[in-house]
Image (cartoon, rainbow, N blue to C red):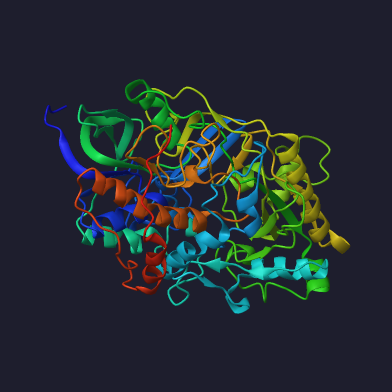
Length: 557
């Protein structure tokens, strides 16, 4: 390692929603911004239409198996936005008043649906979020809507960040969008950040932070191999006045845990209160004759090259009947149609009415023959923030087991009765809807193999008003460590009952003016006020009045 230490104004760790959004605004405001991303930089031409080992699928994902909980996240420039399904609903109003397991409101008093709406508006403008029409939904989404209607429930098309004029309905969204129809951050915030001088460095995995005598931060990183993520080529250090942590809810707390020996004590909530967004999956095996008889739906003349459930986008339709603020906590949830590609969806699906093991064996082999008739329903309940991160591994956020994608993490998760109550209620409702009149047979995915699982990890460094149960203040600054901000999903206090990308992005947008204020205090020449990456200004103009005459207070201990 060279003795020379690079310097930048602001160092951003991670390039997903929390990192890309802050990098753009800070670079546009005049700061020197450097972004370190542990994953590769994949262009649209790199995204492959398969799920083979070594393809864009395994290169762009990070699948960490913990003790009772496994996490699937993004691992590339653009982070989770490259591999998400682009569902962008706003969190229901009641979410912000949740108490969870701590007996008091989890969210800071300064944040509510009303105060976050202007920031949601900014994201809608920047990512061209729009509600799908019924003519836009996939066959699987239409089938789920028809089944809900048949069972006396309602269903709605989802708001998505997809350019319908470019979408080819290939449904390889999880492997990255070849057509740049999905509004990944690689087609908006990140190019705009680069245009304003931000530097993005892929395959740079941050290990820990230290302090300088002047109170700045040094960020220590390893450069990893672009094919075998277990191999480190070199290491380095960059010095910055401000650090934005956006490595994801399964990595940000690990970096901070490893930094504690150098920076001093971390808030109690760092690495605690992890939430899997209450996620759970059910697989329905449809009776095609009943689908035609009861719902009037069919796949057509059979000329399609593969099953119609696999054609189109990921989630297009959700049932929100239980997103009712008058219901008790832990009994509110959404049910969303989802096509999950081969892999985990095949392995973890259980066999309805099995006489032996429910996720492998002869009966499992038989239902695999019917894969074209599978429909997956995604539940998002209110969980109890049960996850706790143990001591960090020597490097990275997990012990790498394979060349790409797979690791063993230090996360422990033991679902409480409250969480199981929500899962059991949502499971029962999915079963009631899809088994009505013999339409299908339904079973939840097994937890026996990898524990519970989430594609939307949250809350491992959450914000709040109570220093005992939150790692961040209401400006996203790390308590006791001024100049360190956390803007990824780990900042969100708890489960949202809907897909969280919209809320993570809005909270990151809201954090930017506070980061700017602290950077100015530390002598960085930076301002706030850039338009959306697309050039639109209405969202910016709507939030500027909210920032006047509100001096920022430093984070408490």
